[in-house]
Image (cartoon, rainbow, N blue to C red; front, top):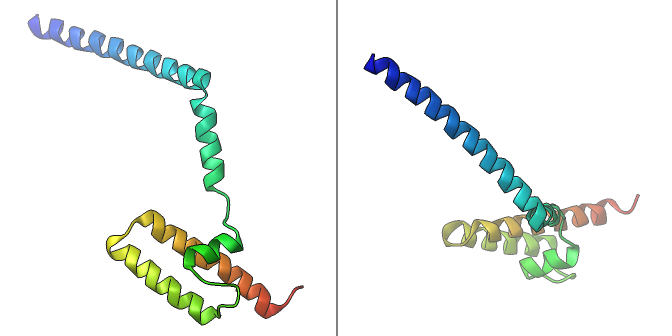
Length: 114
């Protein structure tokens, strides 16, 4: 008899907790929407998805417009390795994106405008 009572108590308590959690989650979503947190998060995600410009890529790698592709690759290797050892993943990613950006411009320069 005690086991049955304990089992019922656990089942009923679990149901109450599940409903309370669902209600709290819905309330948190409503509060976030009301306070503009959801819109701010959406804007942050949109900004993060934008590509960098050629000027920004050159600034990140510390190269000029007159730098050769070999110089760009040397700068990239140095900065990438420094951030791999004791830097940050964020900076390492920025360096990689800068190289990708300049690589696309270099391909256009080599192939010529279509």
